[in-house]
Image (cartoon, rainbow, N blue to C red):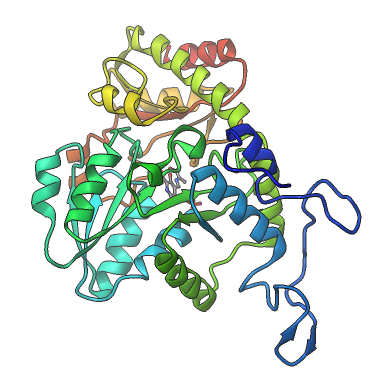
Length: 385
Ligand code: P1T
């Protein structure tokens, strides 16, 4: 499909990277379920493909689609969000330094500290809402600034433009994990980032049925290096997964609108609840970085974090009583999920760091789905009691 750059998000979501199959007219990109491609003579390939670890047509369509949605030049798809994160870290070498957002997904924290720190990568955790702290964390050997915004699970909003400038001035590459927003709500490349990272498992996949990751960049040199690492390491997704993600991006804009609408209603309702101590949602004026969120996000997302009045007992009761919200790790699917980060998604974050960040016993994280919001609110009210 020839769509030009002036096409808007919903048009790109449905058409970018995809055109009807020329031999059959199939409107959907076929699942090229093949590991290899026949050659005419040694080294003389028939089309663009020789082996599916290197590239596959279904994956190529998804890469082009996601690159278009993020306003980037190149996309690469991985077997998971953490595989995509690891691919960026593989651009570094022993002795390089990373400035890492202090509140990130527990698996991201674990990958940086338990895998790459062992290989000689130095890491400084920084509260990136404090720009002076971020500036003073930069060192001559700082090669990467890793931002996640809104952060998981405390939903701090980091000013991407400011942090990108701080990182660039220090000569570092800047990567933003945009999983919580999806490209529909926020485009970090336009705000100065070099790379955007996604867990496709979340909003982009949207149906809780596939694991995947993506990296998008407009920098040819970075892309070339990432592509080499991907070919060499082989953290590529299955072809069925690529098809599922392509299927899902077509409805991303429609789903995200409903996620935002429902989450805002849930957040406002819980903010007035007598048994809730605090609600964190970037769309509430009570959010400390609400102004930053308004500046860089086109909607406030589907994630809501709450602090219940009480402790672990109250949290457990809520988590065990909900009926529509499912008690499960992950987020971003059409179905609402609820979880306890301290015990579940962020259990691998050291206890003292969890305490410092406010990942407390009474903190409960909601991924608000696209069910009828009145049913969701009634479910939460019943469970909070
Ligand atoms: O699960 P995977 O596709 O590997 O994605 C990892 C990942 C990366 N970045 C962010 C911001 C994430 O939230 C995640 C995964 N998060 C969960 C599973 C969770 O429940 O928070």
